[in-house]
Image (cartoon, rainbow, N blue to C red):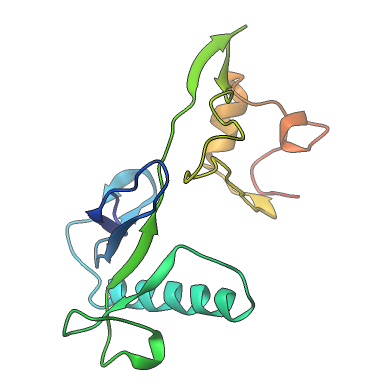
Length: 168
């Protein structure tokens, strides 16, 4: 799945029912565009897993539903953080379907067809991503995307082409 975690599917989701999966957080890491490094950072996977679990449990304490089911302890039980018998790098989650909208190019721009997302469609991941930045560091992929015309300053909420290091 990536340098941070691997996904194990225990039960696939159906059209109307969630599945079950497990994220195995690894001690692997990557650096910028160089990719995965040859060594490991011992304990990194467990640290990320525990931080994620804390965030999910805090959301649930505030009444916000999540896909989090718990952490897998040393005996294979799925437990909450306060029941954990030691560090864990395995988080159990509910799985939903991932539908990929068809993509096409119009006028040199990539356009997605989201019409498959209708009121009758259930048990799926909404293709929504939030990215928050307060500056654009040198080497940010946004500069390449702007140069290729894949995105405009207006689509980024800007009235000009930004420069490296510019505060937003």
